[in-house]
Structures are given as structure tokens and as C-alpha cells.
Amino acid sequence: MSFAFQSARSLVRAAPAFPRLSYTLGAAMGMAARSPLGASLGAGLGLLGDILNEMILRAVPKQRTSHSKKRKRMATKGLKNRHDLVPCSGCGRPKLTAHICLNCYHDIKRKLKDMKRTAEETE
Image (cartoon, rainbow, N blue to C red; front, side, top):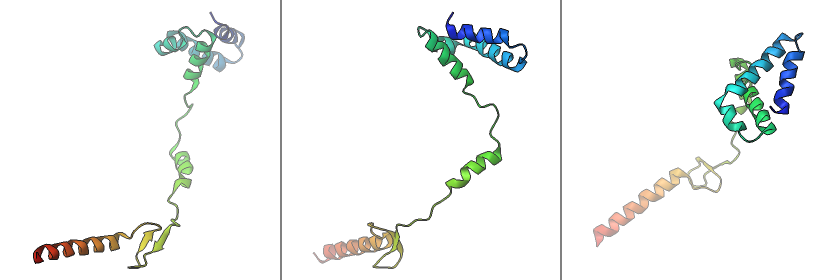
């Protein structure tokens, strides 16, 4: 038996004045001993395996996060103002800096197709 497991057992025995602590530690020890996940993680690791098992068992929130607390946390993640929009010099519509305006692009594309069609018709 490893040192961490022995010290946890001694805490359970020595803490009758704290029933909640002894119940929690006892439950954690029992689950660590019976858990197949705990057994597979702690295999061959000794003291480190026991510490990992205890950490995995305790990495659970005590209570469910309420709706209001979630919303308060998410309140700062709203949409930000865009500072990289400028008016297009050709049509005046807003566009991203260093990008071609989509409206002007479609106009140029349409004109090029028309030019190719007229060139093919004349030949």
C-alpha cells in the first residue's frame, strides 16, 4: 500500500469530528480502489498513480453552474466593432481594407464575360 493511500486512511480514522471530511475521503478511497480507470492509470506508477487517481476523482465541479453565472461570464464575449472597413473608391460601398469590393468585382467579372462573348461573336 502506498504512502498517499495510507495517509488518506489515517485521515479518515483520525477525523471523526468531521463526518463530511471522513465520508468524502472514504468515498474517494473506495472509488480509487474499485475504479477500472483508476486501476489502469495507476498501474506500475506507485505513489504517482495514487495521486493521479485522487486528482481525477476530485476534478468534478461541486455544483452545476447556474444560468445567470454562465450568462455573466459570456456577457463580455459580444460582437466587437470593426475598424478595418473603408468605403470603396469605385462604388462607395463599405469593404475590407486591402480587399477588392465584391460589388465592383462582380461588375468587372460581368463586363469581362460580355467582352469575351462579343469577341467570340465577331470571329
